Amino acid sequence: MNGRDMYRVEDKDKKRRFGIGIGFGIGIGIGIGIGRMGWKSLGEGRVEKFKANARSPKMKLWIIRATTMVLLWTCLVQLTALGDTWGPRVLKGWPSSFTQDSHSATALDVKFLPTAPARVLPPKRVYQNNGYLMVSCNGGLNQMRSAICDMVAIARFLNFEDIFDVNHFITSLRDEVRILKQLPPRLKKRVESGIVHTMPPVSWSDISYYHNQFCPHEMQILPLIKKHKVVHLNRTDARLANNGQPLELQKLRCRVNFNALRFTPQIEYLGRRVVQLLRRNGPFLVLHLRYEMDMLAFSGCTQGCKTDEVEELTRMRYAYPWWKEKIINSELKRKDGLCPLTPEETALTLRALNIDSDIQIYVAAGEIYGGQRRMAGLASAFPKLNHSSQMAALDYLVSLESDIFIPTYDGNMAKVVEGHRRYLGFKKTILLDRKLVVELIDRYTSGSLSWDEFSGAVKAAHTAARMGSPKKRVVLPERPKEEDYFYANPEECLQPLESEPLSILR
Ligand SMILES: *[C@@H]1O[C@H](CO)[C@@H](O)[C@H](O)[C@H]1NC(C)=O
Ligand SMILES: *[C@@H]1O[C@H](CO)[C@@H](O)[C@H](O)[C@H]1NC(C)=O
Image 1 (cartoon, rainbow, N blue to C red):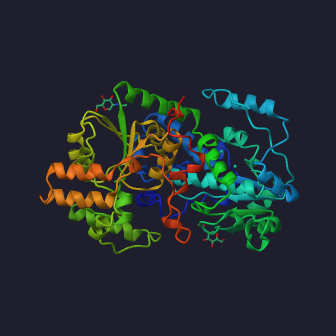
Image 2: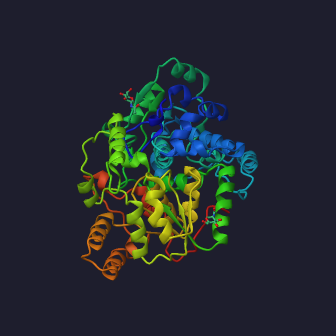
Image 3: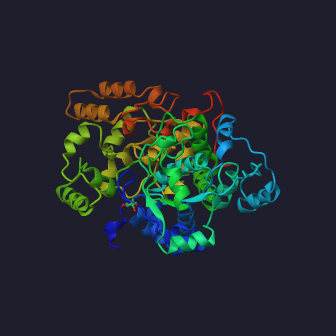
């Protein structure tokens, strides 16, 4: 693997192929064995920097644990058909009637999650096994996060049995799906010898594509599972439509995202420490400054870069076969609002929004391309600037807890954090209108707007609707890619605005 392979961009066609051997060998041991690969998933383009930072043994241990966790997301889902009982169960909201084992599993949960309060586990769902679904997640940490939620939701509708803080994940979802760490021996052997039906599910599908009781001819996945016993889904991002799905399915997507998916106690501990340190010095803002080399190379956005930097970014873009777009006009793309804001543009925008120059800013991002030269403006406007740990999972937690969250680009992290903050009580998330902002910046820097006019226009464009307040998801049935993302605004699961903001770090 050369250095360039290490760079990843969240949203693209690149794949994270956890091979089949990995797929069924999930477990702590294996997680460590292929730590490097797993870290790529976690790193979201910040691997190089992190390697440099990963000096202390403690840090290494955390990396290994984080890695392990991400790998566990590569999951096995066991499928079963309930037949006749399916319909009524959906209508009744999936009640369960078995309670055996709940006692021992509670003990297990407490044992593995010493920091979490004791919780009542749902009773196990009991059903007959019909086959297995094996899932390989692609993308960075946050892309995987939403993919896992979708896969569980799909699995439930297919009557899967099995998938992650693995013990918590497994036990907390056991009234919906049974999640296995490994396939049963006979099937495992078969998969090991290469006999497995592998396919990428059609993107943005309705659940009827996987399971449809009323129009069986529309259904494509369940018959395959019944036929092959194991089906390996080798792409997981955006395989389920944002809108038009049954309410129960939408709620289950939330339940997985907000309750079942937890980081390991070690990462949560670290998150709590960082948040405590920041809080001690007053309010803090998390800036997801998506200005890393991989992002710029991929997007072709080179505003403010020097000639040799532009060349370097272009070379990197051409080196990646799966980055399809090669010839990019940076200026046009920027004017269309399709570029991440540069650090300089970000500094102007934050000042225009009257963000207190005394606020602490935690920059959740990998290494900023161009380094100090590019960060100078931001650092002088906001002296209390901290750069992040370079650990995606930790950045996620700190982002959730911050007083204000501002992403400079709408990637997976920005979207998933936006949605999670809505869920935690509509915490302030400033969603910048990049197209307008860059236009205003150009008018200000060319002298056709005064500072007050510029600042007034930026503020006027960012009212409550762009601050994470309740709003409707945009639905465009014919253009699923342009719809609002389910996980950015999981309306179906949100509390009324008045409720107390929540914290996931107890
Ligand atoms: C998924 O599997 C199909 C069929 O085996 C293959 O053609 C495709 O390239 C695979 N895609 C990924 C992302 O691995
Ligand atoms: C953030 O940086 C400031 C100074 O730049 C420092 O005093 C503070 O301790 C840092 N906070 C954290 C959590 O690292």
